Length: 290
Image (cartoon, rainbow, N blue to C red):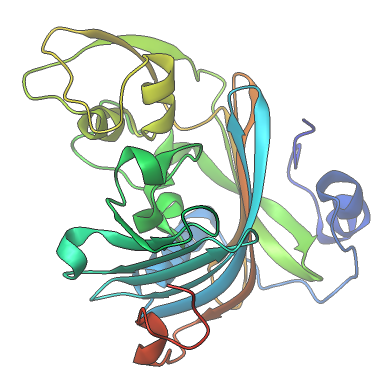
């Protein structure tokens, strides 16, 4: 997998090579204002935290085993309270409403038995063959990449992001944040008392998926005290974020690890903070099969 960017490019250099590197539209638009790494990361984090509603389409690529699974989904979200509607290209629909349905999501599988199911969004059935939960829809995972907390054993990955220049994406110039973390590797970790997959993932900032697959764990499993796990020491070896200079929201994230491409998400038709009628978060909405 070719890397997205190899150094700090000027606007004109990036405009010329963007189509080759990213495989994206290379139409030239005016360069965005000059910005520093600290300004860009702060504004992106604030934009994500300030979201009240979000509509978007997400093109996803995730490495599952030896394969790269691809999906395209439309998403609608409101925050506080959290409401999520997702529909993918196969017609599978997910509706989650915070505080309703006993904490479960409603899922229309678009296949046998063709009835709406109530499923735990953190459970095995809804997590099968994907890196993230439905509750992380939108930019939840991206905000975690840059987050530093006292629970992390090492915050050097989160602090490794740098503004490296601009590129053309979706027909317009965007800022590029990149993390190069060559020290990425799997390390041994002895689980403590009452340790869970989630608590280990938070400690290392690596996400739960690779912990589960590398150690043959079951989603939701409590880890026996003293069990030695193989855990990534960061989220990726090289991570690239492209940020819209108008909204400061991410429009692409690509993560490579020791095996190459781990995941890539492109956000299209992003509409933040515009009212979404409450009826669109109802099982009975006319356009849904829920």
